[in-house]
Image 1 (tube, rainbow, N blue to C red):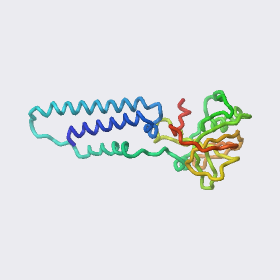
Image 2: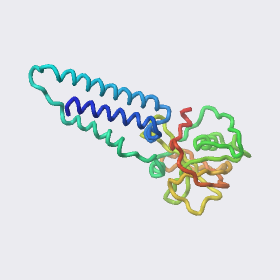
Image 3: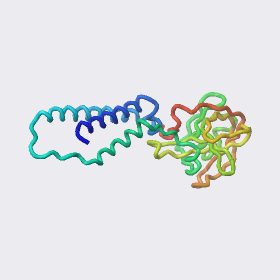
Image 4: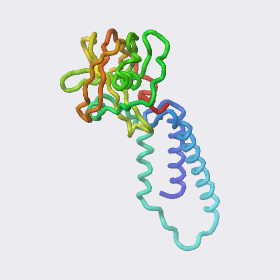
Length: 237
């Protein structure tokens, strides 16, 4: 790999990062708040590529002393992440990962007021924390609406799940709500559902890490498309 090839790889990698950051593709890899840094990284790589090509062009017109030493062939491995970014758009983590990872539900420092509306729109993380750690005190008498994807354990028990992340998809962990009540006759893992229901005092334990998994008593469901951002960043806000 000569300098011209290095510049080309840097340029393509920077362009791929800008493309990912300018579209929703970046949400498959990192949380939404990192978009400016991703765009800045792409711009820096393109600037480095242009500078490298310009320097090499000036250098090509000068006599060179001694023998040129080629760059190591291992540098071609830089193409692997570039090809992966361009050719492979990984799906968001789903039920397979959720059932093999313990719930990441954490006790919040404080509970904010419930949003307006009836039913109350809540995230999986918000409902689960209020039900498990707040003992449902803020949920009594209020129907709620929660959206997530389905996961079925080996016994066929259904869970509504969102993968929560701190930084990127590599550290994503599930938060789970066990479902009971009026469920569809056919449950398909990884299907996205909007679930309407009421608080249930039942609580089970995650078999992976013994973390709390609260129940939601379902009164209605409807299939919905996967959201633009499939990950939940509630605890980062």
